[in-house]
Amino acid sequence: MKKFSLQSEEPQGKPDFLKGLNEQQRKAVTHSNGPLLIIAGAGSGKTRVLTFRIAYLLQQFKAAPNEILALTFTNKAAREMKDRIKGLIGDKASKLWMGTFHSIFSKILRFEADKIGFGKDFTIYDTSDSETVIKQILQELNFDPKEIKPKTIRNKISDAKNQLIDPDTYQNKFVGSTLDDITARVYKIYIARLKESNAMDFDDLLVKPIQLFEEFPEVLEVYQNRFKYIMIDEYQDTNHAQYKVTKMLAKKYGNICVVGDDAQSIYSFRGADISNILNFQEDYEEAERIPLEQNYRSTKSILQCADSIIKKNTKQLDKTLWTEQDYGDPVILLDNYDERDEANRVASYIHELKLRHGYNNNDFAILYRTNYQSRVFEEALRRRDLAYQLVGGLSFYQRKEIKDVLAYLTLLVNPNDETNLIRIINEPSRGIGNKSIQDLRKKARSEGRSVWNILQEVEHTDVYKPAKVRIREFVDMINRLRTEMENGLSLTESTRAVLEQSGYVKALIEENSQQSMMRRDNILEFQNAIAYYEKGNSNPSLSAFLQEISLITDADKFDENKPAITLMTVHGSKGLEFPTVFVVGLEENLFPVGARVGFEVDIEEERRLFYVAITRAEERLYFSHARNRYKFG
Image 1 (cartoon, one colour):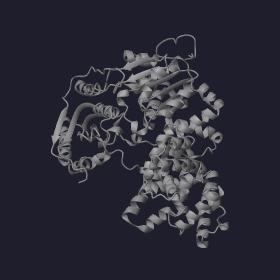
Image 2 (tube, one colour):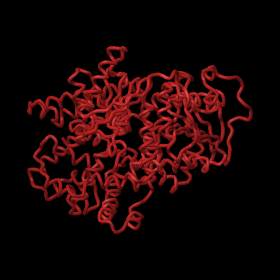
Image 3 (cartoon, rainbow, N blue to C red):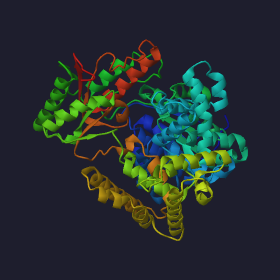
Image 4 (cartoon, helix red, strand yellow):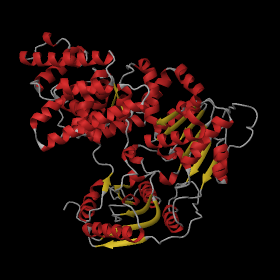
């Protein structure tokens, strides 16, 4: 492996921030060149190590900020790291290439989009947008979306993309299964449909850079030269596409530092491949391995419990967590009659702990395996007037009215986006029927043009005459709004213009129902979000705002300062910590899940998931189960 050094001499002097690190943390921070694997056990201060390491490279080895690429899995993690680095080195932190995989590679793709046949203002489709496209394709192929679920097809296409399997390979590889045959047909059309709409889905943001780098080696060389240091957080969560694209970028200098914990690899259902971290030292033979084993979060009793679980796994990297903290309270098991008894008991414990120990609501978390388990806990907490936040429910930006407004704004940037165009062409109702819309879509397909292109010439189509008038009014409105924005209308003003000229808010006011008023309130909150974004950015743009919204993750929705008890899945809790944690529903076929029990790899992942749940707790940990559970009653 080729090594690279920014300077021939060792840096002089030691920065003050090194004084607060333990020996292993200091070794990880001061490591300079060559591949590095940091095994960061739960609560071992990995964020601190990553941020100090970046600051050390900048201060001591004089690396330029734009030579450092730091990849995370959540916007929250990226913001926290950037804020900490700014506190250490000042405004230079703003020039770092730091963010989520999706945000960083979408930035690269916008610079290079034309090379792979896309416009730089491409739309990023979320999962619901993708499922809408797939539903339309299924209908065109005469399949009933109620029988062949768009979500199922989308998941199969997503898996294929992340394994870098194209439609032709998929068709050859997966033959015989009816569902796979249908997926192969849909997959091919789906890719073409996204390109026609100048849109990419989440998976494309990882796969398209690989295509770009393979087809244009000179572009790869530019980014290899730029990123002299690459750092990847939560490496155990990377999939094959993420593994490959970062390996391509690191090939020139070999200065790749990955941080992770194989014991917390819990996302195989999203394509995460634990072998990426297990085999890192085989991929990079010169790699140094530094374990961070001192835990700063949990008591000894909690760590001993976690260790007793995870040591049963066979596929893992050796490490032993330890802490200087006291033994603390023992882990408690709550035995309950049924799920209602379980929920009431947990709520009672929380109430008592608040009274006796002065805990606040946000000191508690209730963690479960699947989302449906939350209902009885919500009811129990409400009965005791205990405030809670449900993390992982319907996102604000997934609400119908917000998706509608976002669709209008998307068209101002990318009118060729068919999915968003069809979504709001008759929203609110303009008298444009579904038959007219489908006729226009068919015409666009037959002529190899976009629907927007056809709409511009609606007078020359066979659409019903009254509908032509309504369509022309709609097209003129979008063109007018686009012109106003191009002429300098601010984002806040553009949003207000969209809401007024489209008649969207007026229609909600005229409906005058409780639901329509709630939707109107949500739109007002959305306008606040636009204004807040515009005020907080020196160079705000609609494209950047839409990208920021599209890349929000579940972890970014969690508000740790909200005075509320947190209810969430164990998967959603990763990276968080709470003084008191209740892990509920610990029953065979629920947690551990039973769908594929018998496959050792699944049992090991269930253990890792349980390990993650245990290591969220700082002071008190409760396990809970019900002897009877009525899953549908």
